[in-house]
Image (cartoon, rainbow, N blue to C red; front, side, top):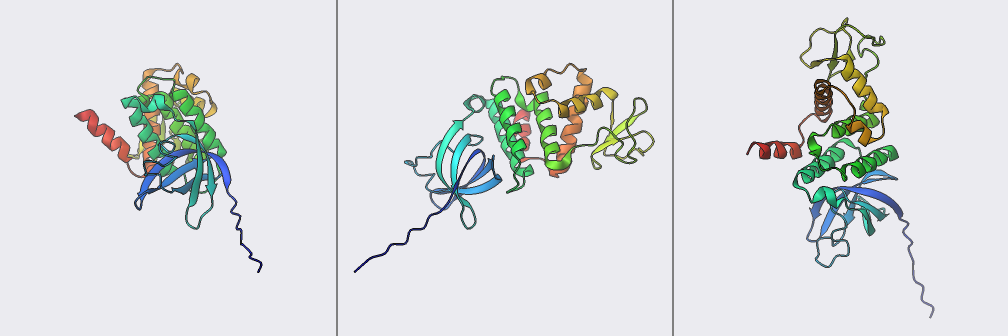
Length: 263
């Protein structure tokens, strides 16, 4: 008698990815949210990850840059092989930097849609983290983080209009009062403003500074841009308020951080 065996070949794909979120599933599994280089944001199951003897214990920590083999599943991808490329331990061993890590992963998870390929977002995050790990400053309050936020939302299609009036479309020229309207996502010229509560009066230097951020790629240079502190604070306020409008609510990580600072 001849016996036949059925062999099913399941094709997977290997990609680099950042770990953004982990949720416990059943007794020993976890659902891992990854921002991958090839497929964008995906959710995958790490089977047995919570067992003490799991080969992937420590490999799937938040914000780890990993090389991972994923097998497509019915609802989620399945994580099989994982190799850590960069754990960014310098950021995770410092208390202030750890708060920055939690903020960053929550921000990315909230803003990035699933299964949308965006390699430029992956490169932006990689470049920013490699800059951040060399710094010992308060990253949550750094101007470089504001620059990262602006570049991030711009790549996601929320780039603020800072070259033309967002209402009339006329090219912005020097002189006259200008305002940044959060709800409209751009600069309003003096002819079009009517004093809406969501408008922030801006300076010529603050507009130039935002343009420099969008055009620059080196975070070390962006963090060292020479500009009056008032203009830097104004730009930081515009980016923060605009980001909050896009998110529609404050991130939980920032709420916790703000509460701890008041203790």
